[in-house]
Image (cartoon, rainbow, N blue to C red; front, side):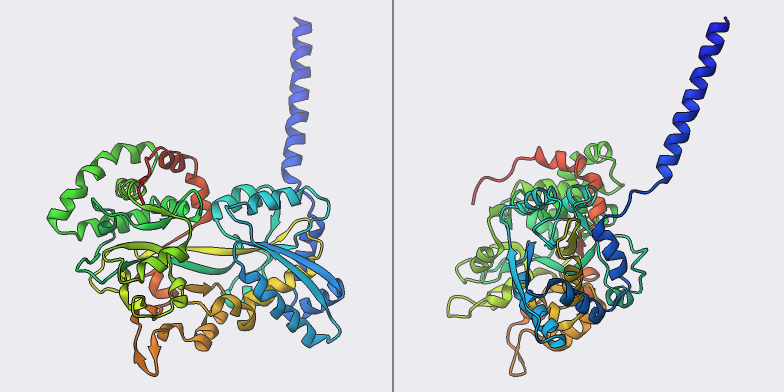
Length: 445
């Protein structure tokens, strides 16, 4: 009996020690990396102060960046010119890479294994994979510029989330040379419709769009759009919505989740998978593309070269029609990060501050409609400089109405733009994502 008593006391002591150590460990935060310490200091400095730090750190060196957008390569020379305006003797070489087929995550992961990496910073999209592969793993660090924080009314030290450079929108548009019109987002998934869309397995932000539709606020938009349909059109979709009720429960979605699942199912099983938005735009603006539609980056309209057969006026942006009901498209962000093993952290922070806090820096992206700076001051000044709201006017005449960008506020409210939320996408990527994977994609073209 004594032996068992002593054994019990020993176990109690051991458990107490384990609990105490665990509790102490839980209260101990991991030490900040060298780069995180620089970021903590950099967030207190103005752009000009950061610029002087960058000049001291990187004069005569080479900075390497990687991103989903080639515009980083356009912005870097502008940044160098800015630094030269402070110190004319400054020089910096640069290299900007744009991996294809979503390889940017593999590239950053491989580079993170080095004590000091090659890449100093990245401009990256797809909030879901950023959260799971880059942030939770400590590969990328968020830097919030002082001026950006002030413009957004936040505190850099307590700000939660990533630093968005801009929000891009992909919108529904259709060729209007025929008699067909699309006045409801459910029209795009009606029998026989095959919208042109970048495949969700080649551009993952498209899959995030589908994830977001299952969030209750966006699912409610789909329900409201359904209820705005004429009775005969509702009948086309009712059975599919009903069949999704049990799926919605099993996936722990909200009361209107079945509407989201029905729309997703019909979309995945009908869209015509394409490799890029540029070719989709080229198809839709041709007068021969009668009754075709697509979901593409709005800014592509800017590069259309007018001819007898090709014109922006051959398309209609669905959401701009006063009779249109439902989602007008979706928006996703380009986020800026410093790599956690950054070789030039001060220079990386200065570059990020320059392109997120100045009109000239954002100009590499700001000249396009459908791309909205996440800095309200820069967004306002960009509109004043480029006049996207009147992008379709020529010599005072409204020649190309589809190019008159209604702006971020309109798109996210009246235009019912579905916005990517990295945390939500990450939370449903396994459940809803696995369900989407079981759908049978349309195999035609």
